[in-house]
Image 1 (tube, rainbow, N blue to C red):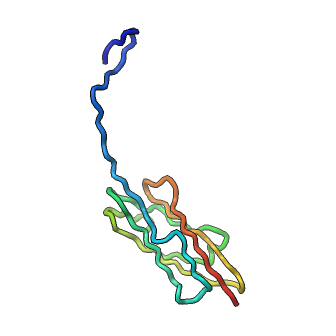
Image 2: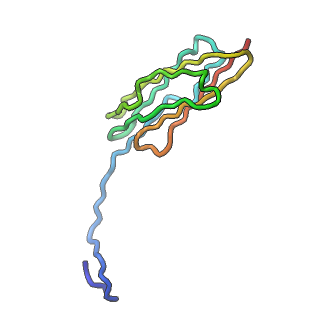
Image 3: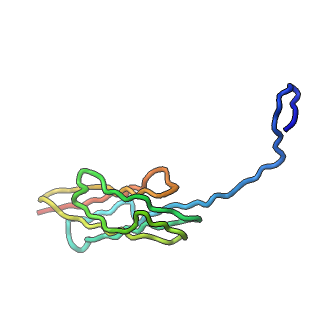
Length: 130
């Protein structure tokens, strides 16, 4: 430090050092999945959660939300999984369970991962026409 003209101590910076932090992000194969009219040809669907970037990323939580969330079933082993290299992924299987006649239902999948300030949201749709 040095003594400034006004008599107050001050610090003198002679150089700046930068540090590049690893950037990791999680990408999904789609932000919307429509199962159509409850036909078996679109059931189940696979959603891939893929790591992109440097460093590692941990999938912390996957939740199914929305008024019609009970019409969809998730099967996966992704929560708590750490993806260490770019391109590494975790699959999530999604099944639509059609309900009553003439209905259009929707729900959302929310994916929370380390180093992400907000979740990734995937919209789910399904219809039953009887």
